[in-house]
Image 1: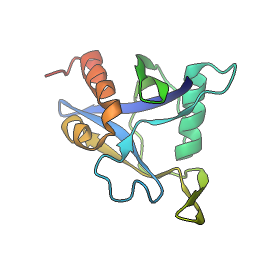
Image 2: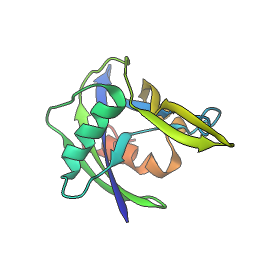
Image 3: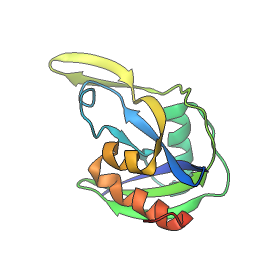
Image 4: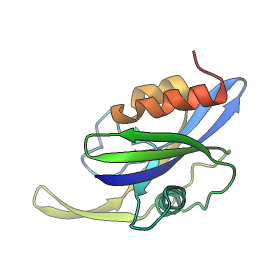
Length: 148
């Protein structure tokens, strides 16, 4: 089974937990409500999960990220295993994402893998994140002691 790893930046403002999510680029996600997620990507052979997560974050946002990461563990989706790390960090929302090429409805398209990022309070994030990643938000809440 394929493995992906990602980083979920978070911050706490006025006692509220905020998370930094990426919006998936391309026509498939354009009109979907649940089109946001943890910035992540595939782990290459012989690559450590955290190193893959940092590399993917840099590729999809243009930002190198470092600090004390919290391991939120693994999550199985329909076609892969996700390993997510959290990091308390205040980041701006200006990104420069790598491009993806794919065929869609008979045309070859090129678009950013992540077309924008945004800070969401935890409740709003639960409404827009892809359903398979919901448990990650719950784990983060437990980890920082802001679970309801």
